[in-house]
Length: 390
Ligand SMILES: [Fe+2]
Ligand SMILES: [Fe+2]
Image (cartoon, rainbow, N blue to C red; front, side, top):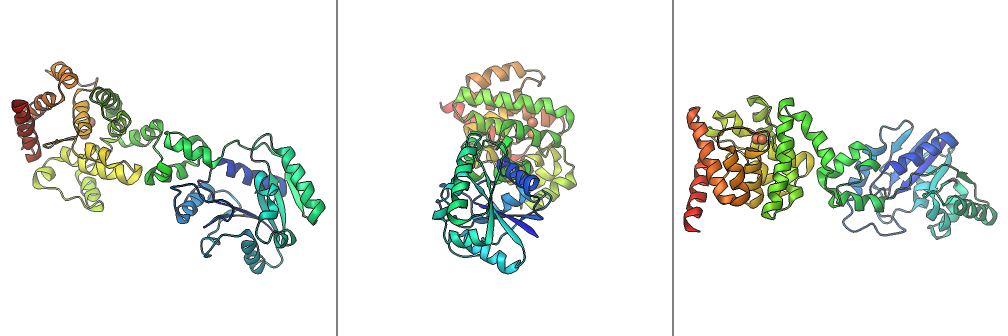
């Protein structure tokens, strides 16, 4: 049996790693590839704010777990101390005495191989598959391979395949700037966004792709409008326009759910609904939507709160909460008597716009014979009083 060992920090695992695995499989036809995320990489410290070894293991499973012939192993996670490859080779040799072991290594690891702990043992027990990590590194790989062969009788196979020129360092940087998804397995990306690992911010395209299938088709235009209106209002009133856009995209993600599903979600997230809320299905999606947005897409508290209060409003709202409340009301697809006045006011005086919006909303509820939520009454009283005192 030929067993290829692919160790590394996988911080995060990306499509460059996948390409390397595929190249090794094509060139050397191993019976199995073992991906082994390091618990504590011995060569260099992990970047600051890196997720735990368990998270990197989970990400690696999401990234590579479905590849044929690939197993993600927790061998190094179960071992205390630094994750030396020699110890891993020793453990695998004990487990598979007859196997042909081969370690997959990139340019810099190959060039510094003598710095590896107990490297002579590794070279005795395992062959090396060497790959360039950047497109112009093949010569360096060949030179290092030739030297290791000559000096130590190492069995090194250079796999000449064009690498995907991307590194974990670049991806961590991209993730913070709402990029990086193109270099990651979709499930790994979703997991990163869910936990906002690496300080990641979701790409807006990705967030729309997540949100829109949860909407009734006719509500997509409204949500698109709300996202852009919220962004414009946030820019006008000096709050974070990107967070306003996130709130706009996600604010109605549970709106189409029936009462039974709203109650199931409420149960799941420990949401307690009062009698006014359970009597009015329309009110439930603010709480369940906020909870789902936090659970699935890791939205920060400011976005959670904006979604939470976008139907009833409340007294003393943050700017972002008011921005979403009004964007929902005045986005370009909205048409009702007085909407132009409300639009104008939203850009002229946010608190006065809140008063007008709340009054309009209460009038609609009264016309439909629906009991308004006390939070809405409180909000109106609050903003009216502010208008009188400022
Ligand atoms: Fe809504
Ligand atoms: Fe809405």
